[in-house]
Image (tube, rainbow, N blue to C red; front, side, top):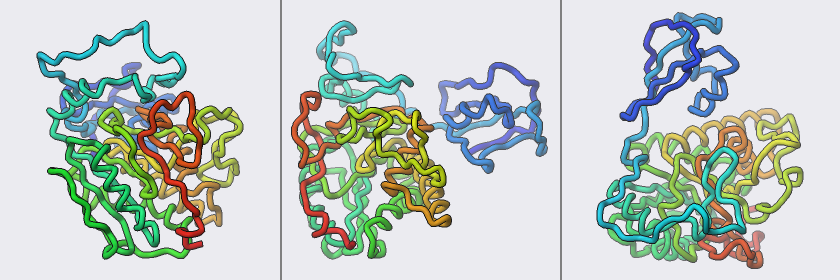
Length: 366
């Protein structure tokens, strides 16, 4: 939520400052091109998000905005006294992979985090992780293994709400859940094309956050149902906006990444731009950051559809476009999104979550 103080200020180089409290104050020249990257980082992307004083259209009028901030329990990392753990080092550790991006976002690999330390921090916060899963048509058959393995490995010890989107609610399996974890079944229409199912996912994530999840969870992860957990997948994955590096392209040169290359599409990424290819099977973050992302991807998909365009990889193409220009705050390595049909990699020492091997013709409606 934005509150605009109706007061003008002279232009200043101090465009942005933050307070340690629940609120962040933003001092910005709204029509200055130089401040647009800062506004974009704060999630102000559309004209409807931009305010100025008395409708002025010059770049000399500034305003003070009060930006609702996320509760501190989702951001601060306070370690309880008396916890014993291995001393961290800045001179030894993994040297075979990169663990930080050029924009200083961590890339999560095995051996770069300590679960004991992280659990000691996060379990004090009393957080809830919403988790969306789409199980339409025959894909409902994957739910049993998904939920069984999730209860063994996924956010163990934390409150999790599984939101199951399905057109076959009577086929959702009854799986025993740990205390504080629950399944919520949301009935959705069937579809004759798997591409439409993929496309509608962003819209349903957005609207469900707005109508149902908001106020009941701190974080959200959106996961593919035709997958299984194999090992620990915990709070090391949490962040403001989290993307996962696709296992098929983590070592691929930029020019060969399967981005949408047609300029007519809203998912377009030109040659020479882009960072990684992100998988659509695992993404997440704080509720409002994911809601904003889902809304923008949905709008861009709808704009493409109105122009008779379908991006190369549907929602995944739009997701990659969004992450290219709205950098994720944390990246998960291919450990968190492997493929059972792929061989092992010397870089991936542990597989935490993977897409199961299957014949797509047996499950997709087209």
